[in-house]
Image (cartoon, rainbow, N blue to C red; front, side):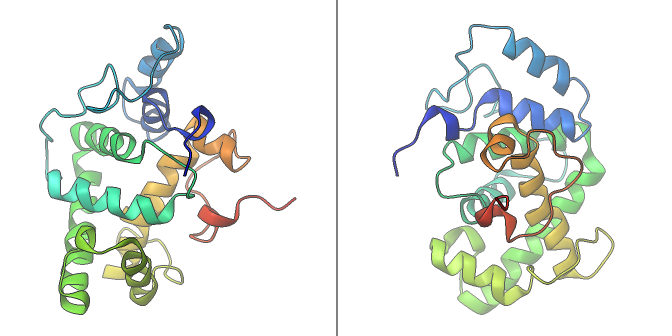
Length: 199
Protein backbone atom coordinates (compact mmCIF):
# COMPACT_ATOMS: atom_id res chain seq x y z
CA UNK A 1 0.00 0.00 0.00
CA UNK A 2 1.29 3.45 -0.89
CA UNK A 3 0.30 5.91 1.80
CA UNK A 4 -0.67 9.45 0.82
CA UNK A 5 -1.22 12.58 2.86
CA UNK A 6 -4.97 12.33 2.28
CA UNK A 7 -5.19 8.97 4.04
CA UNK A 8 -2.50 9.38 6.71
CA UNK A 9 -4.05 9.98 10.12
CA UNK A 10 -2.40 12.90 11.90
CA UNK A 11 -2.15 14.64 15.25
CA UNK A 12 -4.97 16.96 14.20
CA UNK A 13 -7.17 13.92 13.51
CA UNK A 14 -6.57 12.47 16.97
CA UNK A 15 -7.29 15.79 18.66
CA UNK A 16 -10.45 16.36 16.61
CA UNK A 17 -11.71 12.87 17.52
CA UNK A 18 -11.03 13.56 21.20
CA UNK A 19 -12.93 16.84 20.97
CA UNK A 20 -15.87 15.00 19.36
CA UNK A 21 -15.75 12.53 22.25
CA UNK A 22 -16.09 15.38 24.73
CA UNK A 23 -12.53 15.33 26.05
CA UNK A 24 -11.89 18.75 27.59
CA UNK A 25 -9.31 20.76 25.69
CA UNK A 26 -9.44 18.57 22.59
CA UNK A 27 -11.09 21.25 20.49
CA UNK A 28 -8.69 23.98 21.56
CA UNK A 29 -5.70 21.74 20.90
CA UNK A 30 -7.03 20.80 17.48
CA UNK A 31 -7.54 24.47 16.63
CA UNK A 32 -4.03 25.31 17.80
CA UNK A 33 -2.64 22.48 15.66
CA UNK A 34 -4.52 23.72 12.60
CA UNK A 35 -3.17 27.24 13.18
CA UNK A 36 0.43 25.98 13.21
CA UNK A 37 2.71 25.24 10.29
CA UNK A 38 0.52 22.37 9.13
CA UNK A 39 3.20 19.75 9.66
CA UNK A 40 1.47 17.31 11.97
CA UNK A 41 2.80 14.11 10.45
CA UNK A 42 4.00 11.12 12.42
CA UNK A 43 7.70 11.49 13.18
CA UNK A 44 8.23 7.76 13.73
CA UNK A 45 7.97 7.92 17.53
CA UNK A 46 4.27 8.76 17.74
CA UNK A 47 2.26 11.78 16.68
CA UNK A 48 4.52 14.81 16.52
CA UNK A 49 3.95 17.36 19.26
CA UNK A 50 1.98 15.00 21.50
CA UNK A 51 2.89 12.85 24.46
CA UNK A 52 1.85 9.60 22.82
CA UNK A 53 4.34 7.64 24.93
CA UNK A 54 3.25 9.12 28.26
CA UNK A 55 1.98 6.61 30.86
CA UNK A 56 -1.67 5.75 30.65
CA UNK A 57 -3.82 6.77 33.58
CA UNK A 58 -6.80 4.81 34.78
CA UNK A 59 -7.66 1.22 33.92
CA UNK A 60 -6.38 1.15 30.32
CA UNK A 61 -2.81 -0.11 29.88
CA UNK A 62 -0.36 -0.60 27.02
CA UNK A 63 -1.63 -4.09 26.25
CA UNK A 64 -5.15 -2.69 25.86
CA UNK A 65 -3.86 -0.08 23.42
CA UNK A 66 -2.06 -2.81 21.47
CA UNK A 67 -5.31 -4.78 21.17
CA UNK A 68 -7.22 -1.70 20.03
CA UNK A 69 -4.59 -0.91 17.41
CA UNK A 70 -4.82 -4.50 16.16
CA UNK A 71 -8.61 -4.16 15.91
CA UNK A 72 -8.33 -0.85 14.08
CA UNK A 73 -6.01 -2.43 11.53
CA UNK A 74 -8.89 -4.75 10.63
CA UNK A 75 -11.74 -2.26 10.96
CA UNK A 76 -10.23 0.73 9.16
CA UNK A 77 -10.08 0.95 5.35
CA UNK A 78 -6.89 -0.55 3.94
CA UNK A 79 -5.68 2.79 2.57
CA UNK A 80 -5.56 4.46 6.01
CA UNK A 81 -2.08 4.95 7.50
CA UNK A 82 -0.83 6.21 10.85
CA UNK A 83 -3.19 3.90 12.77
CA UNK A 84 -0.97 3.09 15.77
CA UNK A 85 -0.19 6.67 16.87
CA UNK A 86 -3.74 7.82 16.11
CA UNK A 87 -5.42 5.09 18.18
CA UNK A 88 -2.85 5.41 20.96
CA UNK A 89 -3.34 9.17 21.26
CA UNK A 90 -7.13 8.86 21.19
CA UNK A 91 -7.25 6.10 23.83
CA UNK A 92 -4.76 7.89 26.08
CA UNK A 93 -6.80 11.07 25.89
CA UNK A 94 -9.98 9.18 26.79
CA UNK A 95 -8.27 7.35 29.66
CA UNK A 96 -6.90 10.57 31.10
CA UNK A 97 -10.17 12.48 31.20
CA UNK A 98 -12.95 9.87 31.04
CA UNK A 99 -11.90 7.08 33.43
CA UNK A 100 -15.35 5.50 33.65
CA UNK A 101 -15.49 5.12 29.87
CA UNK A 102 -11.90 3.88 29.86
CA UNK A 103 -12.87 1.20 32.40
CA UNK A 104 -15.50 -0.03 29.95
CA UNK A 105 -12.91 -0.14 27.17
CA UNK A 106 -10.50 -2.11 29.38
CA UNK A 107 -13.17 -4.64 30.36
CA UNK A 108 -14.29 -5.16 26.76
CA UNK A 109 -10.70 -5.59 25.58
CA UNK A 110 -10.04 -8.09 28.38
CA UNK A 111 -13.06 -10.14 27.27
CA UNK A 112 -11.95 -10.01 23.62
CA UNK A 113 -8.46 -11.25 24.55
CA UNK A 114 -9.90 -13.96 26.79
CA UNK A 115 -12.23 -15.12 24.03
CA UNK A 116 -9.53 -15.23 21.34
CA UNK A 117 -7.22 -17.09 23.76
CA UNK A 118 -9.87 -19.77 24.17
CA UNK A 119 -10.64 -20.07 20.43
CA UNK A 120 -7.32 -19.21 18.76
CA UNK A 121 -4.78 -19.93 21.54
CA UNK A 122 -3.51 -16.36 21.41
CA UNK A 123 -4.58 -12.88 22.41
CA UNK A 124 -6.23 -10.74 19.74
CA UNK A 125 -3.12 -8.68 18.91
CA UNK A 126 -1.10 -11.87 18.41
CA UNK A 127 -3.33 -13.07 15.57
CA UNK A 128 -2.65 -12.25 11.94
CA UNK A 129 -5.03 -9.87 10.20
CA UNK A 130 -7.20 -12.57 8.63
CA UNK A 131 -7.55 -14.34 11.99
CA UNK A 132 -8.47 -11.08 13.69
CA UNK A 133 -11.25 -10.45 11.19
CA UNK A 134 -12.40 -14.06 11.58
CA UNK A 135 -12.39 -13.66 15.36
CA UNK A 136 -14.63 -10.58 15.20
CA UNK A 137 -17.00 -12.43 12.86
CA UNK A 138 -17.13 -15.54 15.05
CA UNK A 139 -17.68 -13.45 18.14
CA UNK A 140 -20.73 -11.93 16.44
CA UNK A 141 -19.90 -8.25 16.66
CA UNK A 142 -21.45 -7.55 13.24
CA UNK A 143 -24.90 -8.52 14.47
CA UNK A 144 -24.57 -7.33 18.08
CA UNK A 145 -26.22 -4.15 19.26
CA UNK A 146 -23.74 -1.69 20.75
CA UNK A 147 -24.69 -1.54 24.43
CA UNK A 148 -22.33 -0.40 27.21
CA UNK A 149 -24.46 -2.29 29.76
CA UNK A 150 -25.26 -5.31 27.61
CA UNK A 151 -23.73 -8.72 27.10
CA UNK A 152 -19.99 -9.21 26.70
CA UNK A 153 -20.33 -9.21 22.90
CA UNK A 154 -22.52 -6.09 22.93
CA UNK A 155 -19.90 -4.34 25.06
CA UNK A 156 -17.13 -5.37 22.63
CA UNK A 157 -19.23 -3.89 19.84
CA UNK A 158 -19.72 -0.66 21.81
CA UNK A 159 -16.31 -0.17 23.44
CA UNK A 160 -14.04 -1.66 20.77
CA UNK A 161 -15.69 -1.63 17.35
CA UNK A 162 -17.87 1.47 17.64
CA UNK A 163 -15.23 3.30 19.68
CA UNK A 164 -12.63 2.85 16.95
CA UNK A 165 -15.04 3.68 14.14
CA UNK A 166 -16.22 6.75 16.04
CA UNK A 167 -12.62 7.93 16.42
CA UNK A 168 -11.90 7.46 12.72
CA UNK A 169 -15.08 8.97 11.33
CA UNK A 170 -15.04 12.02 13.63
CA UNK A 171 -11.51 12.84 12.48
CA UNK A 172 -11.12 15.15 9.46
CA UNK A 173 -9.18 12.56 7.45
CA UNK A 174 -11.47 9.65 8.27
CA UNK A 175 -14.65 11.64 7.75
CA UNK A 176 -13.49 12.91 4.38
CA UNK A 177 -12.45 9.42 3.34
CA UNK A 178 -16.03 8.14 3.58
CA UNK A 179 -17.85 11.38 2.80
CA UNK A 180 -18.79 12.12 6.42
CA UNK A 181 -17.15 15.47 7.01
CA UNK A 182 -19.56 16.28 9.86
CA UNK A 183 -20.61 12.97 11.43
CA UNK A 184 -22.90 13.01 14.45
CA UNK A 185 -22.51 10.36 17.11
CA UNK A 186 -21.23 6.86 16.49
CA UNK A 187 -21.12 5.70 12.86
CA UNK A 188 -23.59 3.16 11.56
CA UNK A 189 -22.37 -0.40 11.40
CA UNK A 190 -19.24 -2.44 11.04
CA UNK A 191 -19.91 -2.81 7.29
CA UNK A 192 -19.38 0.92 6.73
CA UNK A 193 -15.66 0.73 7.45
CA UNK A 194 -15.05 -0.97 4.13
CA UNK A 195 -18.00 0.03 1.96
CA UNK A 196 -18.08 3.80 2.33
CA UNK A 197 -21.02 5.94 1.20
CA UNK A 198 -23.43 4.90 -1.52
CA UNK A 199 -23.13 6.96 -4.68
